Length: 230
Image (cartoon, rainbow, N blue to C red; front, side, top):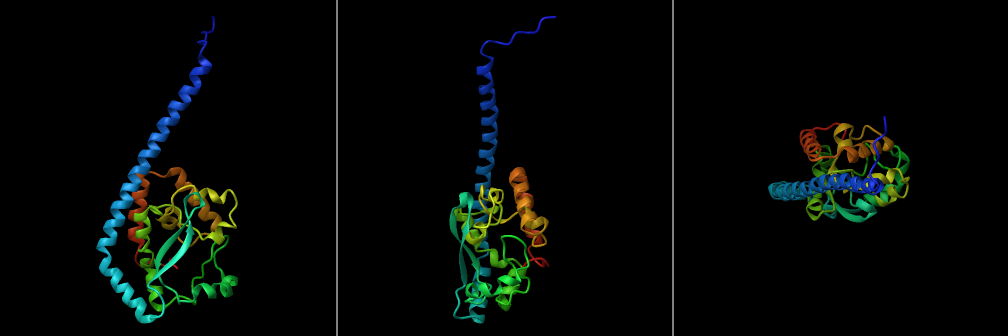
């Protein structure tokens, strides 16, 4: 039995088939990113409008406890492609918190290129409530509206944390960072840095509109009363 002869232009056909599949994959990715941005704009704009009375109340509480400090805390973070942007939060710490950080580095309770202390002495009484309920994160809806962040994605790290990243760790910076993400709803602060990176990369590999919506829904359920938030 003779073997069927391949067409003479077989080698030329293979690259075309490869490009066809690649373009199909790109169309799926592009459609996901477009839908992701539409959801981000709609939800962040609606959230800022609906939550405006809460923003005013929180601002008053922050000022009553510490009149000298600002209501919003602005901090440079590293986003997609290692580009820095100003990220906003409600201030939950004393006004000189950054200066005091150096004195507390030895008490860091999270392994790797992160800094967190469960009973951080720099946090105000109002700040503890804001952090426990994650209300301190709500101003990041403005970052989402501007396109610096997405509702769902890896949390944006500090520049000094990225300086400690390996090339493997930097893979989490290949997508737009988010207000919440895969590791927050699955582990929160109960894992170390390496485990966080693994969960972020899992999300990047699996991400889809349905997964994003599930993470947003789970975050909303977890928003109040989380014991792991600090």
